[in-house]
Length: 234
Image (cartoon, rainbow, N blue to C red):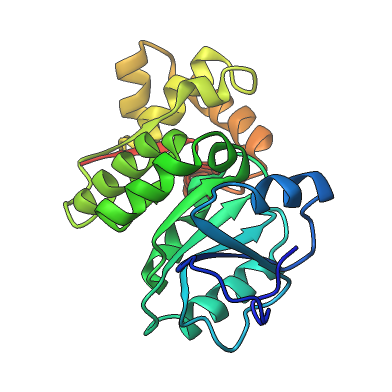
């Protein structure tokens, strides 16, 4: 492991800093990281050093499962805001879209340690050329996320039940009745649409409320929206 404050003076100008907050990196991983390239000096620290002026790339190594890491990452990103360096998140496992909100703190990318070790030169080159790198498995998630944000100001035309999410919970009649409730229909209208007796619709709704743990129709809608069982069509 190298120290940022080593007296060793070499011709290497590009330094790569890995900050391992929880010291989760194994000795094998550290060994691989310290030998990624003859053109880079690798530094591994457990916190952000006060002087990073000569560091070109900073990777914040985190375990996504640990909530405290998010607070530390935000703090470090705030500190590095004005620094002339690239700062990326490096995850122990495959990264998820839950990290996207960190881009608002001037984050330059997200990558897993596995991808980095397999394609170090390509990833660093991409960062140099475009100023950003995103793990490949997150590309489609980012497109979907941007599309949703683009559409969020448009009025909602209809709430549609995600039937696949409730196929093992609700019967076909219950799913159809629930969709009609989402469409704003009263019991009489639902009976007409589904060719059922009003008393049958009332019975289905009663069973539906019990399964959802809801007090009434409105409460049922709130429950399924909170559970993510509904898509908003705009």
